[in-house]
Figure 1 (cartoon, rainbow, N blue to C red):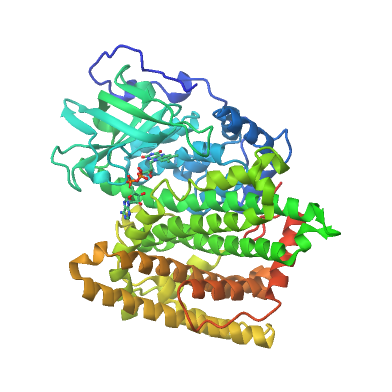
Figure 2: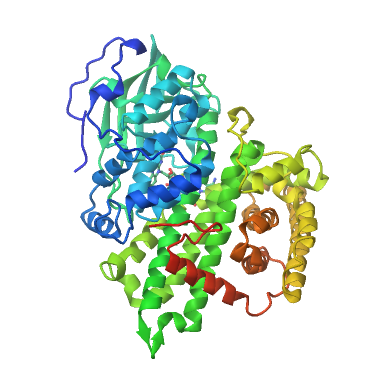
Amino acid sequence: MPRTPNASRRCTRTTPRPAADRQPHAARRSHPVPSHPIPPPSTQQWAEELERRLGSPWDEESPLSLARGARLDEEERFPQEAIQSLHALGLPEFYIPTEYGGRFESYEQLLLLARLLARRDLTVTVSSSTLAWSTLTWLGGTDAQKRRQAAFLRAGHSPCLAYSEEAHGADLLSGATTARRVAGGYRITGEKWPINRATRGEGYMVLARTDPLGGPRGLSLFMLDKAQLEPGTHAPLPRVPTVGVRGCDISGVRFTDCLARDDDRLGPEGGGLELALKALHITRALCSGLALGAADTGLRTTLNLARGRRLYGDTVFAIPSVSRACADSFLDGLVADAVAQTVLRGVHVAPERFAAWSAIAKYFVPSLSERAFQRLTAVQGARFYMRDRHDWGAFQRFYRDNLLIGIFDGSAPVNLHSLGLQLRALCQGTLKGTGVPDLDARLENLFTLSQRVPPLDPQRLDLVARGPDEVFLGLPDAVQRLEGQVGHLDESHRGVLLALARCLIKEQGAHAQAVLQLATRAGRAFATSPELFDLARRYAVLFSAASCLHLWVRNARTQGGFFEAGAWLILALSRLLREAGSLDAPEPPPGLYDSLTSELVRRHDARQLFSLQPLQVA
Ligand SMILES: Cc1cc2nc3c(=O)[nH]c(=O)nc-3n(C[C@H](O)[C@H](O)[C@H](O)COP(=O)(O)OP(=O)(O)OC[C@H]3O[C@@H](n4cnc5c(N)ncnc54)[C@H](O)[C@@H]3O)c2cc1C
C-alpha cells in the first residue's frame, strides 16, 4: 500500500520559517548512505563499472534482476529495495552538477545511465527517473536553491513532477491549481494527477497559476520539500492501476492552501511555464534512454529464445525470416541510438535548436523501439503471451512497459505538433543556408563521439528553435567527407552509399519546400493543419538519417570494425529515405544483412549492448 503521510493530519498553519532554520536533510530521515559509491572515471568506464556492480539481470540474486522484476510486477509492489541499492551506488550524484559536488557533467551521461537501468527494469527506472526533475533547479534556481537541491538528492530523496491535472492533460496553460500571494510566500490549492511518485517521493515540483487571469506569464514553479510543509495541506490521491510499470507509484496530490515560501519559487513569478517547458525538453529527450534500454532487453531475450530453441533440426534463428526480424530490430536500435546521442549531445552544443531536436527524439526513438518490439513478437510466438516463461516473461513485460515511453513527458502527437510548429522557421533558415558562423566547429563537436561536449548554457535554451538546423545545413559537408572516406568499401556498396547520401540532400530540400508551400497555402491554419503532422514526422525521419551519416563520417576511422564497414549505414539510410517518402533511394545491395546478423550474434555472445559503440554489459 502507498504511504499516506499527511492525509489524516490536522491542518495547522504557521508563519514561514526562514530557510536557515530548516533542518539539514540527512539529519531528518534515515536513508542508505552511499557507502561504496562508484569512483569517478570516464563515462564508458563508470558505465561498465555500474554494470559489474549490479551484476547480470539474468542472475536472480542481482538487485535489479529480471526474476525480481517479474515478481514485484505480479505483486504490483514498489521496488523499494532496488531503488535503495541504486542510491547505495551513488545514483543521486549523477544528477548533481560537479560544481555542487556531484558527478553530473552532461546529459549524454544521463542518457547512458537511463539506458543501462532501463534494460534491467522499467519500473525501477521510471520510479528513479524523477531525480531528473532536479533539472528545473539547475536551470532556474538560485545558488541557495541549488545547494538545497543537492542536499535533498544526496539525502536519498526524490522529487516528483506535478504539472498534469486530470481535467487539462497536456494543456498546461489551462491548469487550475492556484498559488495565491500571501505574506512571505504563496498558498497553493488544487489537484495534480496522474503523477509518478507523488505519494512516495519526498518533494514536489509544482506548476501553479500565480496570476488568476492565467496566460503564458501567469504560471510559476515551486520546489517543495514535503518535510517542510504544514501537515494536512497536501494529501496523496489514490494510486492509479496501470497497464505496465505496475509497481510504480502513479498517484496524485491534492494541495489545500499549502504554503510555498518565497524561496521555494524557482525563477521569477510568472516564469513557470517557460522554465517548465525548457526542463521538459531535456527530460523528454532523456526518455530515449528508457526506450533504448527496453529495446535492448527485448532483442536480447528474443535472441536467447531463437538461438537456444531448435525446430526442424536447427535453431529458430536459422529460419531466414527470424534472423531478418532480429537484424531489423538491431538496425532500429542503431538508428535510435544515433538520434538519441545527437540530441543529448546537441543540448550542449546547439541549445538554440534543442526545442525541435528534443521533440524529434521523444517522438522517434520510442516509435522505433515500439516497432522493434512489435516485429519481435512474431519471433517470440506463443511465449510472447506467457507471463512467466522464458526469461521470467521479460519480453511481454518490457514490450508492455515500453509503450508508456511514447505517452508520458509529452505523447507522440504532442511532440509532432511541437515540432511542426517550429518547421517553418527551421526550414526557412536551412534553405537560406547561412546563419551558423561556427558550423564546422559545431558539427565536429556534436558528432565526434570522442570529443567532450561543453557544459550546458541554460541561457541559450529557447522555447522554439529558429534559424537553420545544423544537422541539415551540414549535409553537403558530410557528403563531401563521405566521398573521401569510402575508398575501402566494396565498389557496389560505395556507389549505393554515395547515391543515398545525395538523395538525402535532395529529399531534405524537397521537404523544406513542402513546409513553406503548406505555410503559404494554409496561412493561419498552418499551426493546426493535419498535413503538418506528416511533415513533422518526415522531418524527424530525415533528421535521423542525417544523424547517422554525420556520425559515420566523423567516427568511422576511430570506431573501425562493424561501424566502419558501413553496412548498417547503407541499410539505415535506405530504410529511412523510403520512410520519408523518397522514390529515388536506391535499393541496398544484397548481402548487407549478413554483416548485420553476424555482428548481432557476436554482440549477443560477447554480452555487449546493441548500440553504435559496443559497451560491455553484465
Ligand atoms: C504512467 C504515467 C505517469 C505520468 N507521470 C506524470 C508525472 O509524473 N507528472 C505529470 O505532470 N504528468 C504525468 N503523467 C501525465 C502525462 O504526462 C499525460 O500524458 C499528460 O497529462 C497528457 O494527458 P493525456 O495523455 O491524458 O492527453 P490529453 O492532454 O487529455 O489529450 C488527449 C489526446 O488529444 C490529443 N492531443 C492533445 N494535445 C495535442 C496536440 N498538441 N497535438 C495533437 N494532438 C493532441 C492526443 O491524441 C491526446 O492523446 C503521467 C501519465 C502516465 C500515464
